Image (cartoon, rainbow, N blue to C red; front, side, top):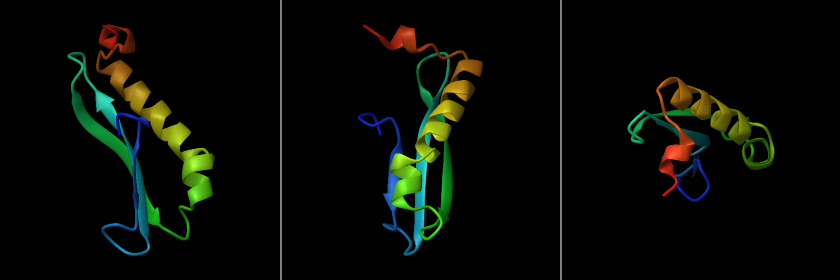
Amino acid sequence: MQEKGYAFEDEECDLEVRSAAVAVWDFSNKVIAAVGIVAPASRLTDAKILQGDVIRQLKEAGEMLSSKLGFSAASTVK
């Protein structure tokens, strides 16, 4: 998750099910939650996940929630 900024599961736990998620950070720079999507593989295609808006929208949601919880990306730069 750290390298790409998201986690992706491609039918590894359940056949025909895919999921993607991003972390939600708090004011102390700790991951406290995740926001994600789970759907049938036929509806959550590679194109929709990796090349479409799914990852972008998840990242935006994660960033918004993190910001509301006091997270500042600038404070993680050392």
